[in-house]
Length: 402
Image 1: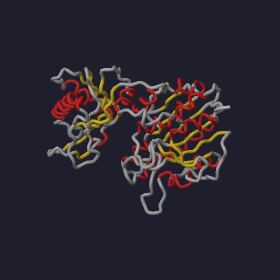
Image 2: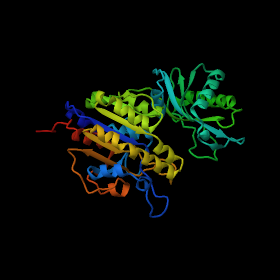
Image 3: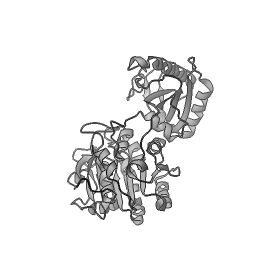
């Protein structure tokens, strides 16, 4: 109810909101009694910010549920993550500016490494670089034609990740993903999950066979794992729901895709964290809501690299004065989900959050970290409530009821 109630309370106001989202921010100790990545990081600027903010922990989907990046971000922007969930392929398609049609079925694919026994030895093909990805996508375009006559498209996303799109009549997204989510096992079969998807499953199986044949001579990226099947759909945007003129600053195509689907303007493409903060400064006068997405926190967590994730958090901390100098009415610092290096994967753990605003009621938190934030004034709340809280502190919500 909360995600829809606030739509009717929105009022016009010339205030600015910044969401700084460190992807996968939440962590775990790697030693008994030790600090998480955020607690281990030297973060004087975030700590100073926390001392004059209201802090807490966020549950992206629900207690004990490990979120994907897509639904976790929908929740951040005030959209019910279950009701609005979609396959990651759609988000990737929007992020790479693919010309989408209602006849399309989108898949987010990983190039991967398979041994002679057909077992997956690396789900990310050594994180091949983006130029290598482009070369292999071109190779697939030149070599693959499907007997069914269904059109197939391969578009580079970034590093080992690629968009695969099928275009034709009666395609169905209810297909089992082929990624086994671990090494030492073969890829899964793209089985139909409902009777209407049997035709599509056969097309996908043919596609996989032809991909493997075309990539047989590749040393690393010799197969592809398919997941995140999705048909095209639309969403009400942040302008329609909250009267926000929003700018998204993100380096990774999928997050640009989420922003695009939710009606945000996409900022200049970036390479570094420094670039992202420079773009925030450049366009600060032109928008009133800013989504600044930091990807490497999540990547280092997924790689199981505790110290590297700490280093990314410390780099972001050094950039905090850029935002502070802009003096936004509301600054939120959080993550979409937790990606502890100890697990090398997304997890169900709640995510630390701080909200700085002149209207906030500062709590007793002095250090920005998981164990401190649990006693903060925001408590532990659903991520979907965050947008309403931010709008309220920006004086953009009217009173409810008489």
